[in-house]
Length: 110
Image 1 (cartoon, rainbow, N blue to C red):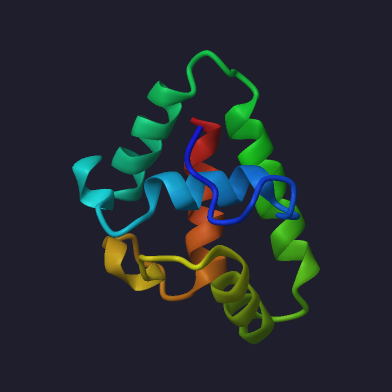
Image 2 (cartoon, rainbow, N blue to C red):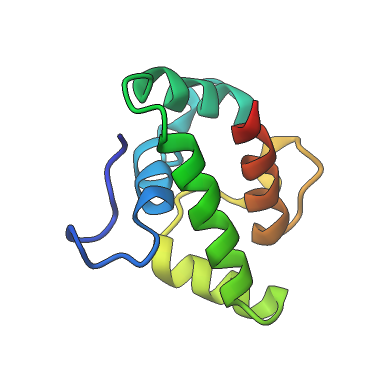
């Protein structure tokens, strides 16, 4: 899977962290210009681990549930995952991290 932004065993949401660290970094565009393109690369790279997409979706659900509102979610997302992308830069109609993560979870169902 992707590269975590934290030492092994220290991240509460390890599969989401690995997805973000490994695929949503400063060179994300090597996978394509859309969330679907990046997630397609993730699915291809994790084809031998059929539970990986479901674990990411579970991490997303737990992370979203752990934040009382979008303001807290934005702060916690930045603190925990150190993203090198922005939620609004994907031409997906999203403007915050909650929408971005929800869109990723939807695309991971496919």
